[in-house]
Length: 250
Image (cartoon, rainbow, N blue to C red):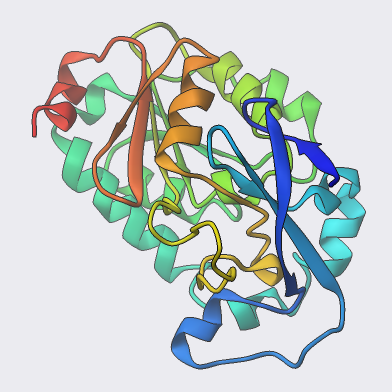
């Protein structure tokens, strides 16, 4: 049986299931795209339970633009342009707004910059950066930040370590915080069962599904602890600044 190297921990991973490329998150709302006939194979790590599609590790940025992040993307994520980033900005402001003068914020994977624009209107110092397509020149001029948000980013990256290495360079010090969202696969992806979870959605670019274990392992590789606020919202940290300590007190 063919094995694959886990993109998180490096352990052997086995073929788990195959889904049609057009499987999208909108299926949870009853909207189904026609079958494309392009099978996307997902494998699952036997150690950390990370589930991912190896096919995408060979894709170029242009491949992703052509096949996923094109003009039709709005059909499978209709709220991503405004509604979702505005909601995320309001959530950040609700949690950290009283401490905004102590925070230098970066929205990693910020797309069109709506989230940062909203936070700036609330009086924050906020910058938006999107690693796609690759832009090293822009990255090198960003500076560092003590709060980095990454909403619905972790499930989109073909190489989690490239993402983490980039984020680590952007952190201002040991008491900086990474605040991110991605749904945990715990209880949704199980041995011996088909890959029917709605969050497995190659048409949305959901090519890597994290378990609580895979996130913890990923953080450990960069000297960070994981704390999950719920099944979809998490933080990575080394030492928490005063304005973030209440996040782990519950």
